[in-house]
Length: 262
Ligand SMILES: NC(=O)c1ccc[n+]([C@@H]2O[C@H](COP(=O)([O-])OP(=O)(O)OC[C@H]3O[C@@H](n4cnc5c(N)ncnc54)[C@H](OP(=O)(O)O)[C@@H]3O)[C@@H](O)[C@H]2O)c1
Image (cartoon, rainbow, N blue to C red):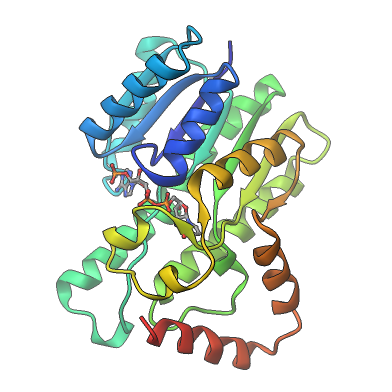
């Protein structure tokens, strides 16, 4: 039986990905900060899917540097080999960068720790093991925001998601010819706790959103097929495609207008 490690499994897309992987017979290692949410999910999967899989929930704050080592120690203690890594945990923060208070600025640094640093560290740790075995897969969660030249009023978030896309495409090319699958998931607006958590509201409700379940199902299917960049939903695909023809300065103005409406 194969094992998938999913970060940010306590809600939203990560939670739905856990269910999809469980339905496909994977053992699960689920990471998040909210223990009760991980326990609830574990119970739900065991009751509803009940396919004899093993589920381990691990309460970790990925913004803390010691968390990665705790995760590695936990897997070693339990003798768990990670076959698929899903770097899904992520946060978004709204606000004009020059107006951030000290506290808000600290939050932005934590965003980089979670969205970028932890993702890179986990990729490095597990990719080397997968390379040795010449088997495995890594799915990194970016966003349609990754394709924008910048994200006024959410500058660190957009930059972090551009990083995820560029980084993942880079290592995918490095691993070409191997049996290790590497993909980037770029969801568009998706109904999750994302907006509640970091004061993002308004526009997400007005725009066409997808369900986290649908996003997870498409992600699982396209990742299994070895697709490089997975953009769930026709509208999102179209927006990304035509976005390439918009001059960068105009795209920045459009993103700013969208963010200002929040
Ligand atoms: N929703 C959208 O519209 C959308 C669009 C594009 C991309 N995305 C990306 O999709 C991914 C999942 O987001 P979502 O929409 O499903 O939002 P969500 O429901 O808020 O889920 C975010 C997950 O990340 C975890 N997380 C956040 N900070 C963490 C930390 N410091 N340590 C460990 N886990 C942490 C949360 O768990 P705890 O709170 O329990 O720690 C939660 O499980 C993110 O990378 C996001 O950027 C979302």
